[in-house]
Image (cartoon, rainbow, N blue to C red):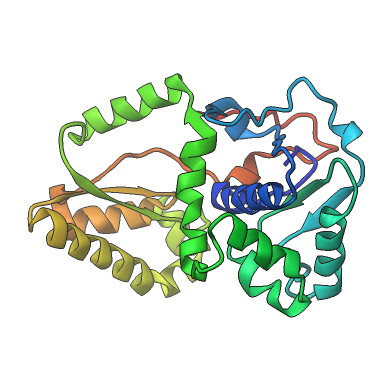
Length: 271
């Protein structure tokens, strides 16, 4: 992921990274990651040194793109492209440079139709052949902790937020609601009708989080809410009171932090 790509959010990247790590294992390659966005400043390598800082990305040859869904174009709509890319990865090329947001389960559910036996044999060799699709996608969290450690400055900020909200010594349930709109309550109500139409969905998500807290922590268990919507935060605070802890921090999707190639004025900044 570089500043000339629209790479999605952290979830898209972690799915693609996990998929890429599995492909590296299956083809006996080293996994290298390069990005010029927020994560580069906030995440360092952990058990595996994936850093490409000392390398020239241009040496990596032909960039290949394989996305789940990208403006109607991707592996689902272009199976011939997916097969070509996978065969390229399996080929004799020493280095394969590509960008993807494919989830790990794509190795199972999408490649069956390609009849590429080396994938199923490779998954069997590393003990993943009998995993269900959901279990494969569950590898993402493990891979995150295997590959990354968070910047200590970020850890300190998170610790300060938890202390401020009274969550530093308490067990709690976390819930994240992203509406795709950032603004005041008035702006959200007047300029974002989709948010209002889906308000019942936000309530359902919050109800689910509260039910989870009740089940695991008791009826007075705390919750931490992160959202890009002031309206959602307000609604949660009114409905659930002091159980629902949140902060007036403006969240922004990672893709919106990226500069367009021709725009030199919008410098990246992560708060």
